[in-house]
Length: 344
Image (cartoon, rainbow, N blue to C red):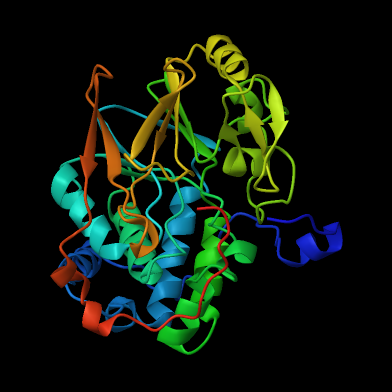
């Protein structure tokens, strides 16, 4: 994410008032949502199922229902254990299905997703459609927070925008989802003990209550506390540092220890970085990075991981490999233009 003028940023940053759904627009019934979710889980072969299962008008309806739920959630959403915590998914739909096979399907298990649902992988639409449908159907069982890819600018470069155009023929579905992304919470807090931003910490935010006071219903800014929560990374060097990503900061063990102490936290769980083993503890156990997209970009060869927390916050990290290749429908995968390297 480069730096841009405020005028350019405002062009992509609509302000949202309280959502009022058109009384003439029918909401999905529980039966409708169950059908959508069931159809998505049954898509075990290649080709985006999103267009067949939900045409554009129905995507709009689903997004409006999700906005009604999300607008009432705090910037830092409280989550109760037991819960399964998931890192980046990045459009790898069949690996998302594999993840649910390993962790267990909702609503029998609670899930906390840390963002980056779209871009990079072949099936961003399928991923975000399934996760949003699950959120609407089971709002107290599924928590979706925002990642740095849940924004207009990044998705126009790294695949989601192009996928929406290819599947639906227009950018309208992309607009529905990116408008919805503005409503996602910035982080979660599990049992007042585990803080879960997508990226990391910010020099502007000493306490979690400071995060609660931010106006989150905007496009992710190029700088400032919301940007930092999405983009920052832990580092071996102490103090705050300039991030090589061009957005956010690096933060050292001293920063982590102070933040955890001042907020009575056990540790921080975040995503945002490719980890070859799927997870990595840093800062003497003060930060855990989870990455949940195995063989990232279908070429990195990494494992993925999720973390199970029981009702007493006992933790178990589960590593997993990509879904079997025959389930990916390799013969039918879309032909994509080359994407910028960015930072893997």
